[in-house]
Length: 376
Image (cartoon, rainbow, N blue to C red):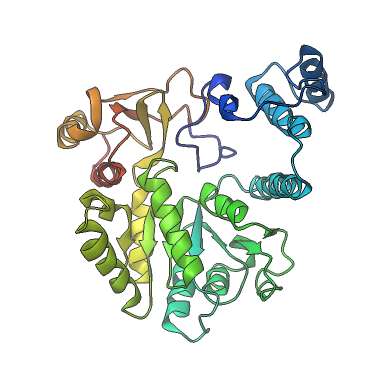
């Protein structure tokens, strides 16, 4: 039975498995003022549960308990006496995220690729032209494109697939006040006040990231993407460097290899986290190959669960288990059905092992090897 098309392709790598893991470390916070009724008072908690139920939720479910935790944390800002500016920031951030998730939630099934790059790239520049070509190819492969909504590389990322297959994730800046003419006015154009909420949506909604030449903002996005994947804070995705004029990513690679790696600031396997594409076709093929056998991954306790599109041969599983033994904390790799605690993509086979939670560059190499295998 195929996976439910309403299930999003992008899944959380390390989802909370119990409400106890959603702690807010209150033991290190200053004491609440005692003149107000405590928010964790049973009467207040009962009122919160009633509100959840009244608007159609189920306060006794796991999602209902998450909602209660969110409302409880919000109400605790009253006895905390937070400043107005802090309240405005938290309120705006939650409202931005809620609206953005609603927009993306209308398109759960298509794979999505985020493209980062400069807003200053002219439309006749080689970097612009290869971005148009790459994004057009991804649309032909059934993917949608997410970029910022400005000009330059962002507009190129929209021009290739066209308006219908594009998302615009815009940031409000005093010197960039309008969206490009491809995405302007589209219902998939989302405006953000904060960079951190905007970057969260870029990365949480995409199954691939393509980096084109850009300035400080592009470098910020490049290193944040690499850091999140390197530390296991984000699901593994293909990260591709693409350019139309040689030199930019050569300098980046030289810095990574001859400064970061030589000084021991990164590990050799970390260089596997990104791929330098030679052409738009090469970039497309690399992204699509990443999902040849691999579907997604998550943790169930300490077990890394790699969901597969088809089962692997037993001899390939044995070979991978030996080759990547350094990743295994105990036991060996094995194929199995979904764990009881899992709720999505239950039809897919799994390749599982107890992971050391280290060396995610090697995990990236493991996924590459999985995709090179012929199915059983």
